[in-house]
Length: 252
Image (cartoon, rainbow, N blue to C red; front, side, top):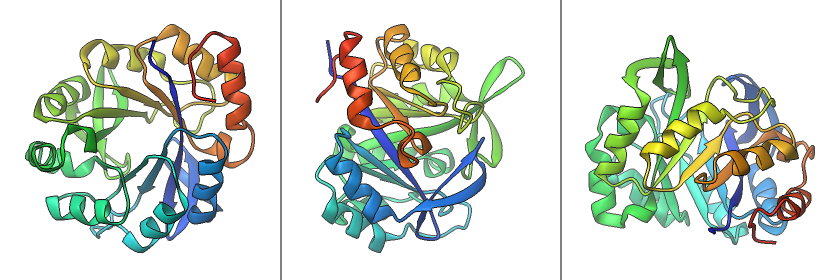
C-alpha cells in the first residue's frame, strides 16, 4: 500500500494567503512564508503554492515570494499560477519549486504539457483542473474558476496524462470551501481513468472527510486542504494519528 499524502495549500493573492467559498468571497488569512515554514515543521508531506490571480490578471507569478517560501520549506513544493510558457516553468523551478502546476496555461496551449514533460520530466508537471458540474457533465473552468471553457473535464484530463502530466490535482468548485467533504463522485471517475497520482482538493471540513476519502477511494494519492489547516480547525499531526488508527498508511 502506498503512503497517503496530506498537503496544505496556500492560495496567495496580493502577497497574502486567502480563502473563500466556491472560489469566491476571498478573505486574507496569513503571510505565506510564515505559514509555509509552519507546515514544513508540522508534519505536512508537501506544500502547494498557488498565485491565484496571476492568470486572470495576465501577469507572471510572484517569484520573490516563492523564493522566500522555498528557503523556509523542507518538503516538496509545488507552485502554480500564471504558468503559460516553458520559461515560466524554468523561473519557478529556479526559485526552488520541486514541481510546477499548470492550469489555464494548459487550456490555452495543451502542448505546454508535452514540452515541459520532455524538458523537465513527467514528475515535475502537475496538471491542476478546476471542475464544476453542469447538467450531466463535468466542465473545466479557467481563470481561477471564473470562466466555463466548455471543455469536458474527463476528456481533458485523459489528454493531459497522455501528453505527460505526472500528477493530477482535481479542484472541485462545487465543494470548495464548503467543508462538507470531498467530491467523491467526481474523484472516483477521475481515478478510474488516471494511471498517475490523483490529488483531491476542495471540501475538507474535518478529520473524517479525509478518512472517508482514503477508505472509499483507495486509489487517491493525497488529500489537499486549505482553510481547515490555516485556521487550526484540524492539526496535521492529529489528522495523521487518526488516519493511522483507521489503518490508512501515512508518514508520521
